[in-house]
Length: 218
Image (cartoon, rainbow, N blue to C red; front, top):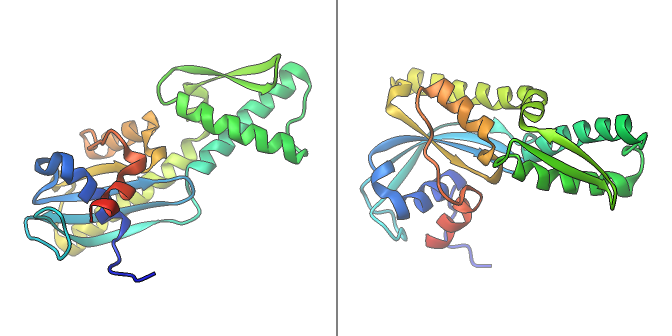
């Protein structure tokens, strides 16, 4: 491959967002909250009107602060949901979902799909052993059990905000949070950010595709 340029993921996400809603991010400080399937990072960037080489729009992006955890991601939420389902399956049917590689793989797969549904509905039935064994999981149960995972992302978010203030004398009132990554669709993420920032984050219709779309535009 002939590598022409390297584009940081937060920059790609901002670029994709700008193509549709450039007025929302131009000349602003953006804190990109990126919760993907296997990693998490939060990056403070500044977007301004100046053309970078190769950029399709009049936009220049600089990174100011960054933090995160390469071992934290949506898969951890899948495992929490799988634990809930496995416990309920044992209580209801006396079936142990752990210890069997095939059952565990199926469980994690159905729980990943159930997690997506829980971003839109209050409760979801999870079919654990077709055709007759299923249990129901509620959003409240899921959010309660995964509270510690969400708190970890909050601590990284708040650390970057503190670094921004210490290094650039910038309060959070000057920062807009932008969501990217498929797992950022979980309602608990938006609620947490509203609690920290005092206002809702910027959201795109396809947060799971923002980095890919931005790289393609670039």
